[in-house]
Amino acid sequence: MVFASGDVTSFLSVNLTTIIATLLNTLILFLVLKFLLFRKVNAVIEERKNDVARTYEEADAAKADALELERQYEEKLGQAKDESAAIMQAATKKAQQRSDEIIGEAKVEAKSIVDNAEREIEREKKIAVNKIKDEITEIAFSAAKAVVEKDMTSEDNERLIEKFIDNVGEV
Image 1 (cartoon, rainbow, N blue to C red):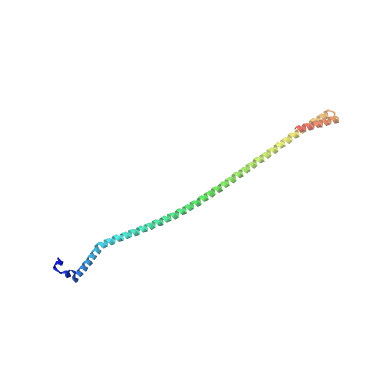
Image 2 (cartoon, rainbow, N blue to C red):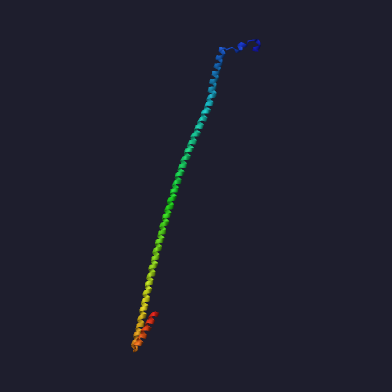
């Protein structure tokens, strides 16, 4: 025991050899740890730093890809809306044209029917007028025949005219 012998000062004294030896030991320990341990630790830290940087780069690339895809999607959606509007406009225009064609055809057909009906009415009217003329001619011949066959007085003549008028009214 050091305390028992009374040499307390030698225990607390500063010895230059001990200090140098301690510093050399610390330096050697530092160099050994640096070459053996710190290199591995630094390599792990550097690898981890590279992994983190690579992860950030991949995340940035994925974000850029996502933004590009979103832009393309928006562009395609806009194009689809434009195409849809163009298709609707073309369909509306085509339907309007077809409607106009149908209306035009209907007008032509209606005019044709009206023209045919007017021609038929005119033809029937001419036939009726010709029949009336034929009947009037027959009545006139009958009246003339009756006048010629019979010597008539003015009273007979008036009766015959009234009879002629009555017969024409019935026709």
